[in-house]
Image 1 (tube, each protein chain N blue to C red):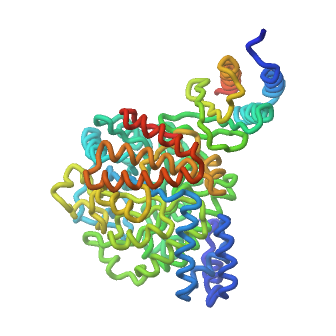
Image 2: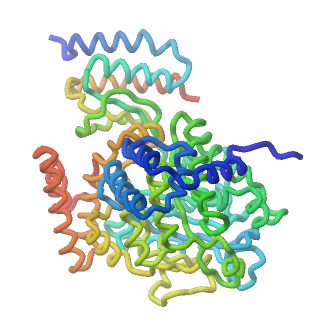
Image 3: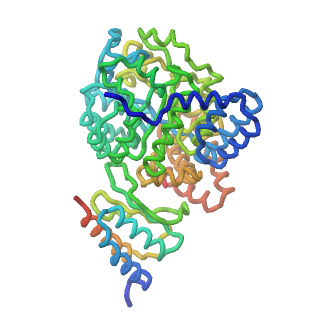
Length: 109
Length: 470
C-alpha cells in the first residue's frame, strides 16, 4: 500500500501541472499554497525567504486558525510554515519539501 | 530643478483642519464607530477628531483608544532599548544636539568592541529588542550599519541575546537597503521630522543631505522596494503645528498602503522636542506640544490607524508615560541611555555632553516593568513575528482585523516569564507572576485548550528552555 494518500497524489499532480507555467518564484509558490489549502481545508501555509533571523514573508494562502505551526526548511534560506496540516504524513511533507526545493531552484537567480 | 509634487499637500491639510472646526458630536461618534471596527480613517475624519474640544467626547475618545489597542494587540506592551552607535553628522538640523555646527558635542562612534560591551550591558538587563541609531554621515553607510547589525546579533551573554534589531538611520538608496535586509534587519525607521514643507526647509539648511524633503519622504518607499516590508514612520512634535503633523503621518500611512498593496507602516512614533545642549531653537519654538494636546494626539493616531504599532519613548517623563500608555501605545523603551557608550557608563548617570537630547524617564527596565504590570498590562519581549514570517502583507492581514493579539499575548507571557526567571528583581518577580496568572485565567476564559497550550510552553521555560514562541 502506498504511503501517499490519494488526496496527496492529486495535490501533487495539480501542483506539478501548474508551477511550470509561472516565471517567478512568488507566483509559483502562490499556486502551491492555494493548491495545498484547496486539498486540505482549514489549513494555512506560507513561505518565507530568510535573512539571518528575519523570515520575510513571500506569499501564502489559507485560513488562520492560531493552531501550532510547523516549520519546513525546504531550501537554503527558504522556509514553509504549515498550520493545521495534520492531514499530511511525514513522507508526504518530505515530498512537498522536495517540490518546493525544485520550484526554488528553478526560479533562483 | 522644479520639485515634483508629493503626497503631502500643505494647503489641503490646512483646508481640512479649518473645515473640521467645531465638529458635530454625531459625526464624531460615527467616526469613533469606524475606528472601533478597526478601519483606517480618511483625512477628513482625522481632521475632525483633531478639532474635538468637548471634554465628554475627549473622554470617550481616550477610552476607545485603549479598547482598540487591546482589541488588536491585547494588553501587552513591548519593550525595547535604543542604542546610539555614533553621533557624527553632516546635517545642521536647527533643533538637534547632534547637528554639525554644535561644537559642544563630543563626536564619537562605537568601535565593534565597544558595541559588544554595550550589547552585553543591555542583555544583562534582559533586553531582547534594540533600535540602533546613527547620525547622518558617510562613515555610517550601509556596509557599516550591516556590520553593526551582525555584531549585535552575534553578541551573547549567558542566556541573553538580542533577537530583533531595528534601525533608525538616514535614508538610503535601494541598494543600501538591500544590504540591511540581507543582514536580517527588523524595522527600518525614518522620521520625517516635520511634514510641513516650508518649516522643513527652514529647519534643514541647504547644502546638507537632509535639506531634500522628498529624498527623506520617499526613503521608506525605497526600503520597501528593497524588500524591507516592516517600516516605521514618525514626526518630531514641536517643530510645527501638532495637528498638521498628525495629518502628515496619516497621509504617509495612506501613501504606503496605496503604493505597496495595503502594507502601511509597522510603527508610528511621535517624539516631542526635548531640550538639548547648546540648541536654542528648542527654547524659542512656539509649537511645543502641551501635555493635554499630547494625550489627544496619541489617542487620535490610535483611532486613525487602529492596527499600527505605536511607540512612546523615554523622552517623556514617568508621569506622562503612565498617563499615555493606556491611550493606545503598543511599544515603549525602558532603561534607556542615549549617550554614545551610555549603557556601560550608566552607573555614572547622565552624560549631557554626548547626548542628542535629554531623557525624561531614566528609570531602570525593572522598575518600568513593575509599573506597566500595575497598569494591567503584560510586558513583552516578543520578537516572534518577524521570525515566523509574520511580516509585511502577512502581518497586516493579522493586524488589520485585530487577530494578531492571538499571537502577541501568548508570546508576551512566554517572553515575560523568561525575563522574570533570568533578570527580574524579587519585587518585580512577585508582581509579574501574579500578572501572568491573571493572563492565564483570561486565556482559560477563551478556551481551556488555549490556557493549557500556553501553560505547556511555560513549563518548558521553567525547565530551562529559552526563546519559546508561537
